[in-house]
Image: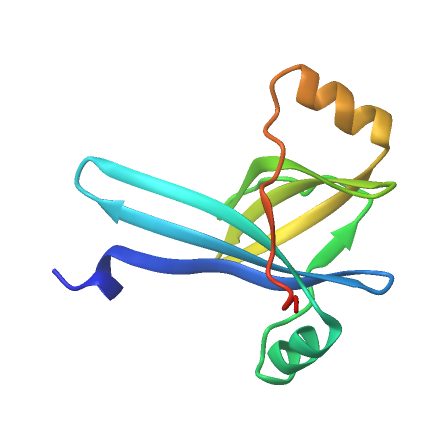
Length: 131
C-alpha cells in the first residue's frame, strides 16, 4: 500500500484573525485497525497566507452558531482554539464527501470552562520563518 492511500488531507483552510494568520489542516489515516483524524493549526505569516490563498486554499468559516448535523451531514467537535483574547470551538463538518473546518466564536470564559471539563485544546505550531 502506498503512503498516499494511507494518509489523506481532509479539511484545510486559512484562518485570519485581524493581522494574524493560521493554516488549518486535517490529516486522516484510515487502515484496518487504525482510524485517525488530527487537526493541526500552524501560525503562518501574511505572505505565506497570501500565497496559499492564491494557490486555492480557502478561508475558514467563522460563525457564531454551532453547525447542526442532519441527513448526510456529520458534525464533530474537535478542540478549543484560543488566540490572544479570542476563543473558538473548532468543528469538523463532513457533507457530500467534503470536509470543512468551522470555527465557532465563544467567550474566553466558555473556552476555559470547556477545557477544564476535558475538551481538548487545539495544538498550534509556529511555522513562521525566524532569523
